[in-house]
Image: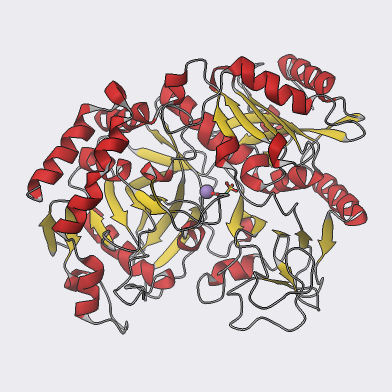
Length: 580
Ligand code: SAT
Ligand code: MN
């Protein structure tokens, strides 16, 4: 492999700090992956699964205190605190390096330091970017093999000797007291120590593709978003591409590979978590999926909720923290209606009813090509043309099933005002409502006021700005029952969006929050859903909204002069329309 001098020097310097027994440059080959798997099977890091029912699939059990992203230990270490902004934890770069340096010093003693050159995005795309990370975790190396393009393909994509994001990862002692996930935007550098969990340890994903990626995107005039990418094919064979932002563990993977219940309609998968989007020379927004794998939530993935995912994880998949059946099959809550007898839980203990068998944030790691609905052009270096952007959140009340923003600025306001209920994907309390603009609260690597301004500024370069939609699959009735069946039926909502994009579906109500479809506008053919029920799912209540908008002043207020005026104006106007 041809390696840049700058990268070599940085690797040497890092080895000087972490003191590994040996340094191994990864080439990304199948042979290398197989060697890693064999070594992990031997030392117990991986357990084999049933080779007949789940060929080439493995189970990894993480440390029980290391099962989700730890936001309170994640920092943006910009030189100026204001550049991290009020929604990020900030630490001064020097202090961050002193603290983490203490944890990293000698951390790789007697371990191998793997150097992983990885490419985010398809080979040959000007939108793709290179990272080089080091790690002492073979599980991280194998996972990076699945989630990114590793080896010469990455090194060849470098446009200069220093054209890469550098990442240092060490398991350290896995103690949450000595865990830090640090981002240095001005140095294109990530330091992560003390966790082997996905979002903390697979540095290409949230750390690079979102946190540093978003900061880079702002400087260079593009977008790095927490969005799935899909192509929706209609009965005429026309494919309309959408990108949708949703918080972690809120149905992104399910929607990304949804199997349509509507005759003639089908959904093609481009990505399930991250979209990098550029405005092309013709003013068209285009998106690539920087990843090459899925790191999806296992619980509640079933033939009913996500048939494509259940098929795709039947081979070449690494499962983390799921339960195990006596025949060596993985199992998680929801996979089958009843738990099989003799389950071993995610901790490796005989499962006790009433406790989780799989961890609520247990995961599967699997290559994109395994997805039965993978789009034929998912690796198109030009990206796919995006005609609609969707902001989705998880809210029991207030937010209608679907509505459309009036225009770009209003849509950006809707995204910026998004709030959601927390899930098991982050360490902490589940079900707490918090603001999560564009589902980027944990991932925006710079001041979110500037982020809103960046979003607004793109409009002037877009010849036909994508339509902006807001969705909420999770609204419930007074008895706590979901108002909308969700999953495969969500294609009905996608169909409405596609019709709107192409100038159809005029049956909408103009409300203070945007255009809400009238019940007749949604194709509910074959659904046992009363109009009254649907009306409730689509309802916009002035009282509820005025209350919900109430604490937005406080949220926006934190940004001070960095809050773009058009956003403040949208809030004032929305209130006025509601009579508030
Ligand atoms: O573990 S990850 O952070 O990569 C998944 C997620 O929470 O979105
Ligand atoms: Mn995610």
